[in-house]
Length: 349
Ligand SMILES: Cc1ncc(COP(=O)(O)O)c(C=O)c1O
Image (cartoon, rainbow, N blue to C red; front, side):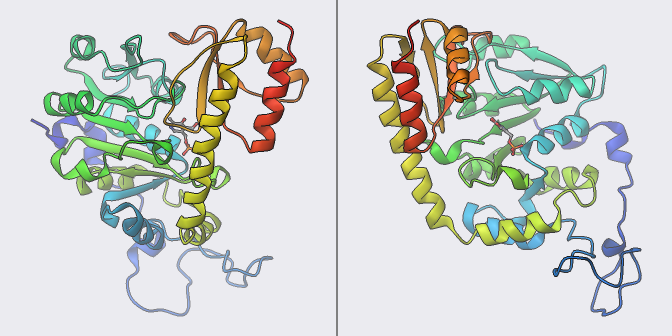
């Protein structure tokens, strides 16, 4: 059974978190002499001389409405990359514990674990990019604290089978993190409405992809109130700056505009796929639930270089396990996709 106290590192259990000036003060006030800010203002017109809300409640209340997850079950990170790092730091004892990942997958799980001196167990996906449940079961040991799943997966683009994720959730009681960075482009639903059934579940999403706000660095974790409280306890006090909080609040009013962009990106994805499939250098295109496609070509490295000479940058994934010969291509605007197609058409391999 899941037991949060058993999973947490001892030092994190005992940690007395930093208490900021604004944490200690409750009620109404008009003169703020508690935080060593510049009381005269700032060169900017906004109140940027004041520290931001450490727990970003206004943003979370808006997200509660959009995501149907209570505000106290939402954590905001400086990108979902920060959520990944915080989870590893909270639950994995360096040099002792391990996390399990299923390559090919997003690179930061490994990098964050490496930075924290946490061992990474790798159980590759099957040839059709699904979870290898027997191998995962064999790979888990008593010190496996977190399993990172990515669905839709980067760089393959496919969604993991729901039944497989549920089988894991019903049998493994360390943390199961489902990274849903690309969920808005998928045919399948988010796991957020399953949170109440699985106390060990953490779902990551981000404003960097469908929402078009990569520069603001805001990622989300959805989980139980208890796990979110642990994440809040160890995060840097002001990890989401005031400008990002304000701009995100504005952007979250524009769900319609974002849905329109998602619809066009998905349409463009299918158009690009059809056009690419007709080209002789393209050997295979994997089905995608994301805003990119994984394309196997006759000579990935040469095509990558050729595209660079035309000023087009794609991602060379040809050295990644199960992605041999593949480029990962983000869906661009219609004009960008046309330019890409022309460049590949004219390439003499
Ligand atoms: C699967 C996945 N998770 C997380 C991220 C990082 O997102 P963020 O910009 O929120 O840190 C990416 C970015 O490429 C990603 O592909």
